[in-house]
Length: 442
Ligand SMILES: Cc1cc2nc3c(=O)[nH]c(=O)nc-3n(C[C@H](O)[C@H](O)[C@H](O)COP(=O)(O)OP(=O)(O)OC[C@H]3O[C@@H](n4cnc5c(N)ncnc54)[C@H](O)[C@@H]3O)c2cc1C
Image 1 (cartoon, rainbow, N blue to C red):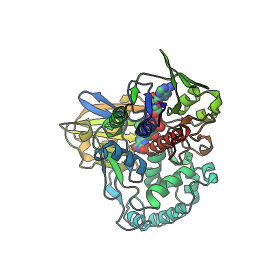
Image 2: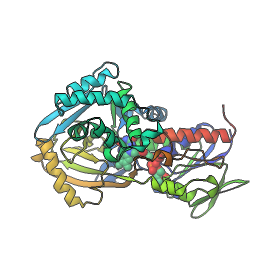
Image 3: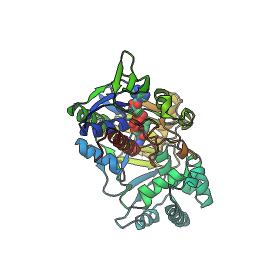
């Protein structure tokens, strides 16, 4: 197939589309506004350590993301646990765990809940009933996107302790939204896909190397090895269309191409696309944004043997041992990942230190007696869109009204939450549309 395709945005969606299009023999040019690729997933260097902008976790049900890594030759960069097993820490009480048994779904959850000591026995029984009811929901049913997951939990006797100690543990991290504000449709999608329909789907994978070695640099190499070009520091200001093709307005020059994948953020897509694309900018702005904060703490000595853990009754939501991926030689580096972090996004580092060091000390006794050698914070104000009720109808389909101009991004209508899996799926979808437009459908 011949043709020149521009991919605007070098996040995971854009990189996926670029890999697919390069495989088709098309001439691909990736244009990324920032000085580095990766979008919401990147690595930076600090005092000899390789730091990810925020801990990223994958699940075994991320089939397209995992396939992409296999294709890029970097599947080894993830360690996926053999069975879903989450240590759950409680201040002053110690550990319990949510661990699936090796039996088919949904029995695997019964056994996990039966042993979950953060809930009383009657609470565990009621949680099993609620899980069965959730399993009966169709996430694609539009009415589910009109109500909040929190309301559904209340209606099913899952407010209070069960919400905090069980449902929020998963949904706040997966949807980056408190359950009272999250879409029931998206929550049903997460719980069904990851936990209720297939026993192995929620097995957790964490990168063993920095994120840029997991998919960012491998994708860049994949595209350039196939003749593609990748430009960073290269914002696209506007796209115009005429009978010759698509004109991209860059700061110093213009580029004329045969097709365009707009894989930016939603607000940038609204600004860049021509009016003929018929996007609804107000809808894209209404998608809003939700923050994620990571608190990074380096201890002089190891303080835990856990690779990761969740916490309840604590400001800590999830913590991860980052020592290996960051290249730390002595001590231990923990990252505390805080989703739906409105409360923390503007807090000074001193305040976060005041809150999170004692909180870690109550969860991990050794942390209370070990000195901290580094403490820093990464903040993403616009980490994901706000996955609240009513967002399904705001998420645009990848095809625009202009053939050859397509959208990609975890915020498009993928049916998935704003995740790496959603980004990869949208990249494939966009590349497929471009291929059909350029006449190479097989
Ligand atoms: C801290 C954090 C933790 C997360 N944790 C997880 C997790 O554990 N698991 C998970 O699955 N997901 C997680 N996510 C979400 C996941 O990272 C995103 O869903 C996914 O990476 C989005 O990819 P994308 O390509 O759609 O968008 P983006 O990564 O936002 O990429 C868009 C790109 O477009 C570029 N751009 C914008 N405007 C222009 C322009 N005019 N010209 C050129 N380029 C432009 C941007 O600079 C950016 O690089 C997390 C996100 C964050 C921030």
